[in-house]
Image (cartoon, rainbow, N blue to C red; front, side, top):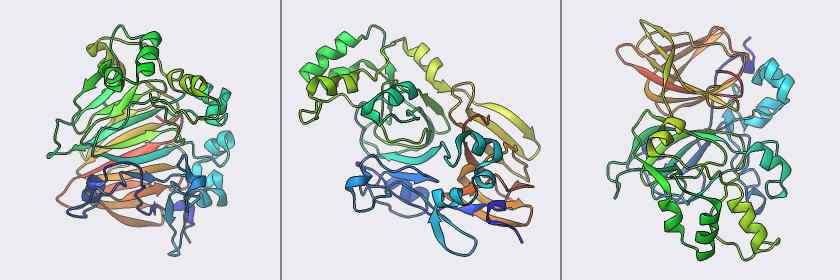
Length: 363
């Protein structure tokens, strides 16, 4: 009999209340016309909680559930706790215990998000602002699509322009001039299929009309650029929490794209498809991502770890030692490390695209 950690497991769809957006997640999932219902994020395979979970009715808000072979639904963290070595991978479990070290999201911004940055691991570990966390929040964005009816051309704010300084930002912060702060950022117009690396400390904001997969460290730490007069430590301590997190290393537009737009590269190619590097050790050791573009049977790389997979196009079958699973666009699949003999097979006459999100040190 095939054990639960030897077979693919479909994740339970979720959508979280956060800010304006959410329609494109619905449409991606085949729900029309869809709704901008203020639930713009789906946390996929997540073992992390939202930053304010303790104040919510659901104290586990953000944590994802998985469909088990017996028909039950449990949290992914509960799945991992049952057997970390076989679920996460022996080497991963030996190094990180029962921590997946990974958070994956679908993110759909109806309107521009606030200007922000995220702490490095060192800053998070050494700071009470971030609960002395072992994780910062380095992330990346894979663009799935752009809203055709967006009131403005979909864009990203990413990276500082040349000439920026902490002193300039101190002055703009004191004046509460957020538009001027945003004007110091490069505006980038992304296209579907592109990947952008967002290193901790890098200024950024997801602009209007962008629908993406976000792969990141498993925290919900976000630092803005606005005052908080109610902060217990006082306004100056809050200012340092905010502006002290940013990396003020500005550059030209061309250099900015060279730093943060990740060019894909083919890892493996056969007559049936391609395994394409999206993000990994060239940018960060904290996570990885690959994309599969398939027209026939394909055996993906064996990383010895689990992975979180999102079907972005088409339909087909996952075949493995012990069985098979039918998949289609918008399916979210947790592949435990114990799965062997893995193959992705598109439906006859069609193509299949999958984005595979990986934990540290895999690609």
